[in-house]
Image 1 (cartoon, rainbow, N blue to C red):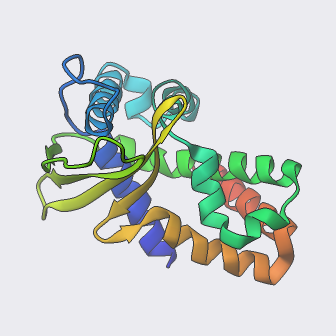
Image 2 (image 1 turned 45 degrees about the vertical axis):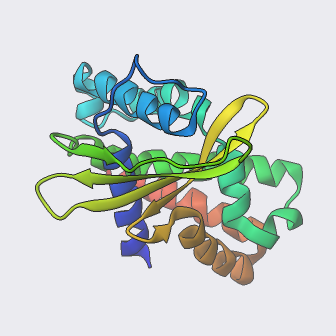
Length: 207
């Protein structure tokens, strides 16, 4: 499971940073938003050697400025926790959301330097005008086999937000839900918090 999760997140990062067409995209549509964010982030990485070398401070800034505004990370965390989300206090929910975000960013650092010549092929997007939960399907093309990568978005009062990613048929939220449930079963909500903190400490130490 650990290897699968790591591979999932690494492929997510590589694909999310692949090429698109930025200024021509309509960010009011789900597919336009995905293409906009992809190109904006990729351009930033190409122009920032510190990010390419894995500078965690710059990576955090990149995520905060160019990815999180178009993501509903609290929803990602809530869905990953499943029924256990309601068992957590508001303070614990905020803490877990922050630790989970930090964990993913630390793992992203290892993938950023690997982003080179990947290209994204966007599948035709079809959705009814009144749909509020949709999937944008893409294929990442690089030196290896093509990688299926789909984005799940929800229409909110603040616009479309990405809250889940599908890599090769495995949804990110579902993969983490199994792991989170296991940790809560072993040590409760505080056990999950500690697990995330320990993982972040280990990744920070090994960097």
